[in-house]
Each structure stands twice: as structure tokens, then as C-alpha cells.
Length: 323
Image (cartoon, rainbow, N blue to C red; front, side):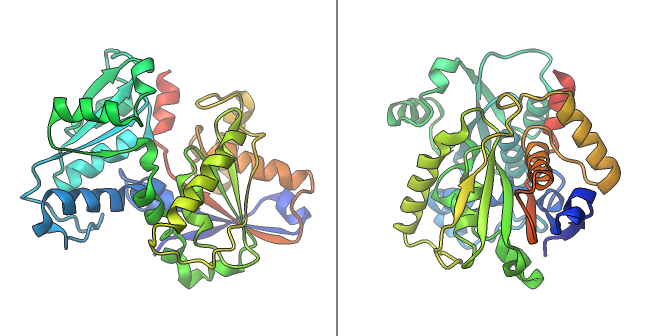
């Protein structure tokens, strides 16, 4: 069962807001946060397609089973500091699934902590130019990758597909004993918005999901979210919520764009760790938590219960320090 813990903040008390954090960062030391939920069914599908005799294997982080008949490779995409690359490499080693990471940009030695870890887990790193990387969704590029690497199962960047969404619909189910229906608003940081879509499909009537894009100009995610919701609802995959689909984006807390930080955010993250005993990552969760506290101070939230999802990604802090 996942851990929910209260956050005691003077601004929340002043405005009669109850804050709680869902600690997805604690589910596993390496495959942490929402990353596992986005990978779970992708890996399950890969195993089922590659070796049907192993399709009944239940992928469990705490009791990993190997797939002795798996002869393919898991291939995915990411930047040089990608949480998704990090988690996929770790999961590959855990379940004995060979992995390939298509990395945006040129190789730089020595490797940064993220890529050094991925390589240590057995992931084959392949660097491509930013122009080529933009083709990562195209069938033609996938055909080239298949011709080069043979039997591969491709997971999109960030695990952004129906399997990734399906995994994220199970996040709230893991804490049903905590009666998640008591929360009025569920807040989380957004990159590809895969997790937001999964959470939205899991909520009940009168609950709202609030996403905080970490990319500049995050408004573009609105159409992507609507498309993903439509595709998932048309797929006949499980929908644990009541399909009220009540969500919105808050696009004012990107701090200049993806991977961008400033002294104000650094100070907030350090102070939050000291006062709450919770480490946030600079790329995603620190920005979302900052935004929530700032909105509380502005009086945006009043007399409500908020659940903030800690989506993990702490390894990214090493990248900030490295840079």
C-alpha cells in the first residue's frame, strides 16, 4: 500500500486547506514514482508479444521474476538526464530484459550520473542528433531502428501510450484504504501528461485533477490530453473512475522551461526538505509543490483537501548538481 502523509504549512492552515502528499517516490529505490506505473504494462505487453509462454508472469518490483525465453530488446527514448531512461534501465536489469536507450544529443564523456547509471544497468546507449530525435514517433524511424537492432519493443518517451496510461489508472487504487474520495483536488507535475490522464480516469464525481506543466508554453498539452483521453476511452481498457474527466492545467510555474531552475526554487526545495522531511526533485515535483503553496497564499484554494502526488525522479537532482 502506498503512503499518504500530511503536510503542515502555515499558509495552508491560514486558508483552511488540508495538504497531503502521496509518496510514490518510496515505492522502489531505483524504479520509483510514476515511472513504474508507466512501464508496468508496456513491459508486460513486450513479454507477451515476444514470448507468449511467459505472458502470465506478474511483474512485481518487490518480487521480480525473470523471463528466460525473452529474446528481444526494450527500446525507448529520452534526454541525457531522463528519469524514464533511468527507470527503464533499472527495470530491464531487474527483470532481465535487455534495453536500448535512444539518447537525444551527442555523447559527452565522462557520462553524467543518469547515463552512467543506465549503462551500469546494461542499457545500450545510442546517441542521435536533435533533428533525428524529433522523428521518434514516426513509423519510418521505427522501421530503421528495427532494421538496425532486430526484434525490439518500442516504448515511447516517458511511457506515453495506452499501456502507460493504464498503469497510471492504478495509482489511486493502491491507496483506496485511505479513501481517496475525500480529496477535493489532486495535484501533480506534468511532462507528457500520461500520469495526469491516468489519474483523471481514476477520479470520482466532484474531484478535480490539476496538472502543473514543467515545460514552457504547457498549454499545448491540453489537446494532447484530450486526444489521450479519447483514445483510452475508445480502447476498452479498464476505467476505474466515473469518467467525469474533471481536469485543468496551471501553466505558470515552469520557471523558464524544462530543466530550468532559479535560486527561488532552490531555496524552496531546500526549505521544504528541512521543514517537511521530504526531498523534491527540481525538474518536476518542486515546481508543482511551489505552485500549490503559492496559489494557497494567493487565496486560490480555500476550505478544501488537496492530495499532492510526489512522482519521484529524485535522481534528477544529481543531474542539476552535475551541470
